[in-house]
Length: 102
Image (cartoon, rainbow, N blue to C red; front, top):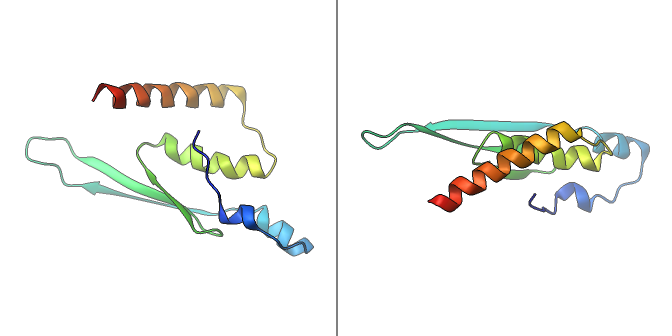
């Protein structure tokens, strides 16, 4: 998984309200369809933005959404299940294999 330095990592507040706010995360996901070249299938593109920290990641696949949100879950002390992590590993491995064949 790629490593990112997030604005929320640079958090310095210590009041109780600030700590509660740090445990709440909102995301905006935007997707759009790109017009294909003649005879080609349409493709989609998009990005996900973490609202409080304004971090943005452009998406290549739907699994990128889960990877991005998982960063924040881990920082909240939440561990995703082994089944989910195994599935993500398989999806990422499959994607890398496809990219390497190009």
